Amino acid sequence: MDHLVKLQRSIDGMKAMFETRMATFESSVATQGTEALPDEYSAFKNFMLKAVSSLQDQMEFVLRTLEEMESRSRTNILLLHGVPEAQGEDTSSAAVDILRQTLKVDGITLMACYRLGRNLIPSKPRPILLKFGCHRTRDAVWAAKKLLKGSGRTLSEFLTSTRHAVFLEARKQYGVKGSWTSDGRIVVQCHDGVRRKVVTLAELEALPAPPSADGVVGGVRTETEAAAEGKASPAVVAPRPPRQARFTAGSGVGKR
Image (cartoon, rainbow, N blue to C red; front, side, top):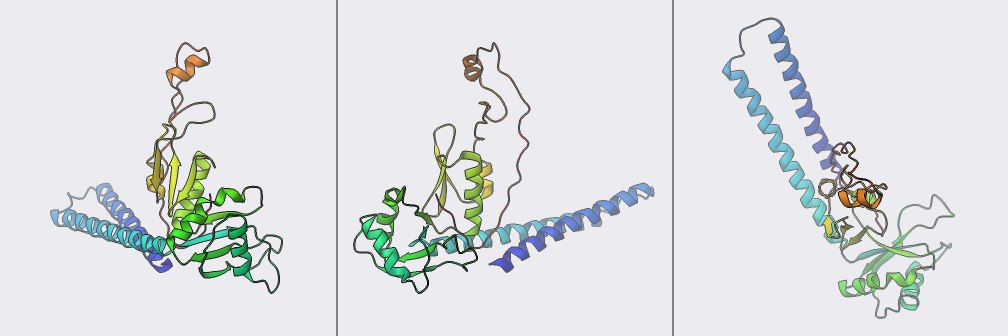
């Protein structure tokens, strides 16, 4: 899917270049005191802008569709982290033993089990990909993941790189306790107490802004917060500037 992402960026660049050149041309005409541009020019400009915008919308739709398909293909997959590596190891047996003994889940059938990536850092074991034979077993393992606490091992969902990027950003904004993953989607505990699911950075940025460390929500301190500090009126600060939404695609890893 990387070539589609490159194509999307190429279209974005083409639109930016077209708008820049048109603006330069129009500025040059105005400077020279030339008569108003003919209607044909305006019609051509509008047509081109609409055509490029249509291409952008279609590419975004294709990318979103492919990304959703890739995410669904990972439904029965989990990643097991923190298992020490050993030369000649039987990864499948080691993983199944952990799941049975620690998580108390029986009847485990793995369709695939292997280490991800290359062992670039010997002291940091690579995660083990676990592809289960059925979704029910996968869910039973995922539901029991808290039993791994204190063992040095963790479980995570196998997110695409798009959703992994969203998950990392959610962690920055809402913290570890305020964001996690569920069935390939990112769940965010907003400051209003409502849980919301997102899959793109645009959707994440559209959520209510989390409160800052000093109790400011969305840039303005509430009356209740100000009164609690013994202030007569709320302290108003400048609202935060809007954040830019981004879109990427590929494959990656995310964990709660």
